Length: 417
RNA sequence: GUGAGUGUGGCCAAGUAGGUUAAGGCGCCAGGUUGUGGCCCUGGAGAUCAAGGGUUCGAAUCCCUUCACUCACCCCA
Image (cartoon, rainbow, N blue to C red; front, side, top):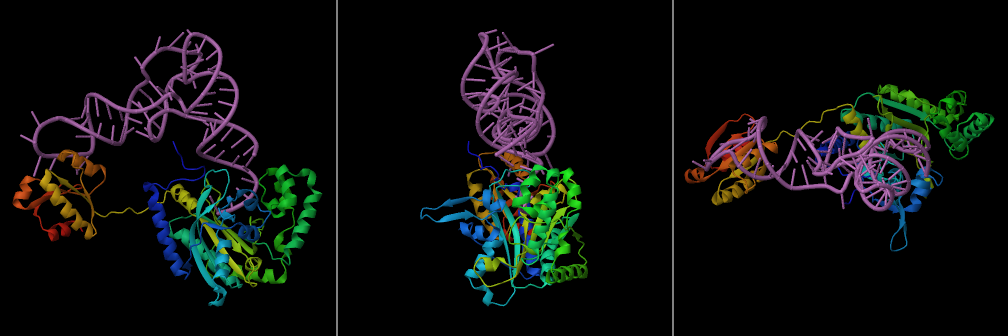
């Protein structure tokens, strides 16, 4: 039997309510923040991600789905949202419209990894990008935007961590010093850190190995290395966050996996014990547009993992409001009544009433059984007696009460609307 | 890529010092007389016990191989 490929899954009807409520709130909050929706293709030129994310990052090195199409073009299934948005920004000359540009998206991403809880080969992200403004009030806005969305769907116990990793002027010096420090500690490092030392130095600070914790605690702090501009940006951001009373935690060890990040980086996770994984992450990328061939342009954005939000909603047992609209089954007895059923069902649906014509193969009892097993609220019964008198029976399955009413559309609609 | 755990009908599962019809529950289908549901009763369909190979008179149960799923690491949403 065929199965969905590893790390992918079907979104079954019983889970669709989560997606519905998320989409609804994405639209609502995005409107409040005045961001406009954009959709980009699932495939992009493979090079976009090599240039954007960084050649030596794990994502590009071993997690992309890359293939040649029949025209020999090297394409990659989108592994993240920011680079494609920046590509679209440049392609459509958005720098020529009023700045900054505010865009949001809800799109699937693909990464070839081993699946586990909250990690899939196909996952969806709600993300937003603000391109063209370097002032930290936008950093604050982007963080608030992500935070507000997570709150709007009903999540609590959220935890915001922020950091500044400097820019291309001040970061290199920090990395050099950090490397130097770690080299002096090289015989006490775990094997992962030994590897990180050369190919992902900033990640050293994120090691969970208990033996490495003391080394980390004594490591140079990147916030001490910020140049004047970066420091001013950072401190102003903190003030803005205070203005809006958004609780944050400074984590000078917070780093991110993409090369394009500069200055502000942040993550939002849940304090609920079971899943410490990040639900949202993002940061500033002041060099990315230029890296992709555009003018020097600042930008900042976030990505929120839809599947992780849903996982956390279930985890926190957030109840999703149910659809409590009426749902009607029309039970017919005999051939002629079926024709009347078809007629009525069509009218009811045109009036916005959820209507199902009961299975004809079943007797009345079975049709009633059927109606209650699919949680319908009402049953309309039409048999010979009703046809003769031009009436029908309408039964409320919740109360069990039934009435005989004339077979007039307006009468039926009045009861069911 | 590395490590650990798990794989019995659509779902949850009993059964493992090998013994021959593989429990049970949910769900599904059908009945419980002629036109009334949710409860109850009865019956039915549905499993080559993840797959392949081996040991044995005999294997869901023992051995080997493969695959899948789950969790964790790396990394990330």
